Image 1 (cartoon, rainbow, N blue to C red):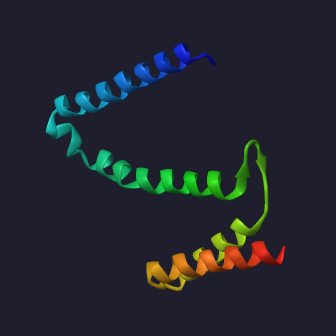
Image 2: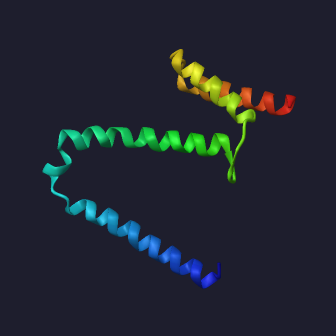
Image 3: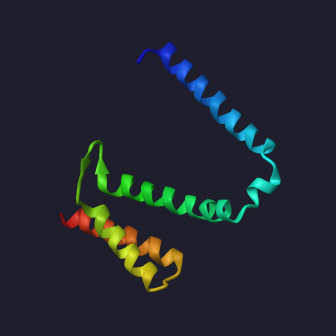
Length: 104
């Protein structure tokens, strides 16, 4: 991809993002208060975070891999189900991932 093409794509993407954000101010408040939209809106961050975890934790380029990151993810899930405090979850997952990486 050439430099000019990259700048055109960057500019177009920026304009599109700004337009979508600006459009949000013109949507009537009554539409946003609809219960179905509120339920869907509550689930969007969960689905995006789940997709990010899968994309960053199990995929390298175009291949699915099972490595140290999966061990850290498993520990994090176990601690979350055990209702551990979030800082404990993060530290334990990182330590587990690092230990498995160095043992492998």
